[in-house]
View (tube, rainbow, N blue to C red):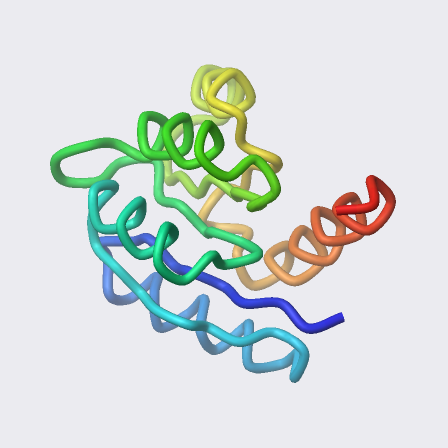
Length: 128
């Protein structure tokens, strides 16, 4: 199951780490990386990625608002919210924004690939 990935993250260290993790699965292709919510929406409109890995805290439009807008335009795109913050409040807000999953950045190495596989599996189960 091939999937295209858009990474939306303003921390280059996290971008590098995410790319390294994603390279472990030859079925996943990072199509672009951007640093703001506004750029994420623009790139998602043009490229229609299967999965967006979205930082919660971004310059300008934050990840929650970008997720709301992206899901309103393209609900089939799966969004995984990343944060370095405490989990309780942001996780609830991520779900309310339409995000399909939530990851803490400290768990990126361990949880990114299984989370992508899970949300893509949901896409297949729903027939989309």
